[in-house]
Image (cartoon, rainbow, N blue to C red; front, side):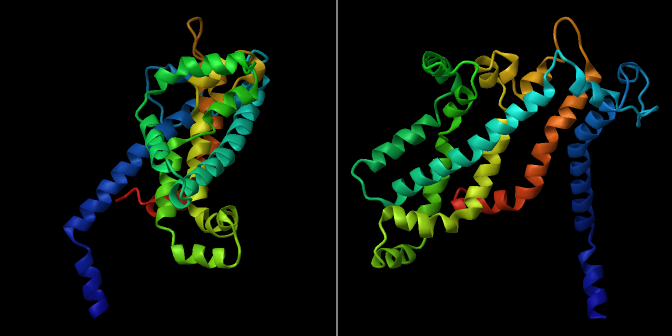
Length: 283
């Protein structure tokens, strides 16, 4: 009786309204993905038809086939370039941010507070201000039409340094002192104690860095001028030009390029929430 009474008590109008609101929000969130997949499986005539169709009729996969067979658009190579850039940028930038955050939080170096202030100030500088100077430096070093020219400027992430610093400031000092009693240096304490205990932060910021690198457009467009260095986002933009608009191909390409991001988010969503919580950003 008590269980039945509790179940009836929980089913209140407020609970029903909450579930309806969440269902509506989920529907609105998934609607663009449905339209994208629907248009990718349609012919050009069906996409531009005035009458709305909920499902493609007939169903066609020609858009996905043409996506990888069109010689003018190196989609396969572009996907490989995006994967290479994101796979290198995510772990390296996250590790560098972790090392910088630990040094600022735990190593007593004169002027570390000033250095941290400068790092925070960089977060307030618009990217458009540093874009041209960065291009001049990378271009003078021969980084145009190279993968390293796209990767290197994105390896330092001031926001990730801020999160790691907050995380290590909350890290128990007793554990580090025990490591120093065993003869570990600052590097040893970081490598053997601090780094293994920051897996959630590493996974969360690594996933966010991967997504950011995968979605980058303007910098890879300027540096990767040769089609051999195009990323997936640049290859997608070729479907929409002043001369022609290939909507089914564009939607098919969007479906293909969004799959790695969806997989990354589904795998790392728990770590993303937990990592931001551990960083102290919620305070």
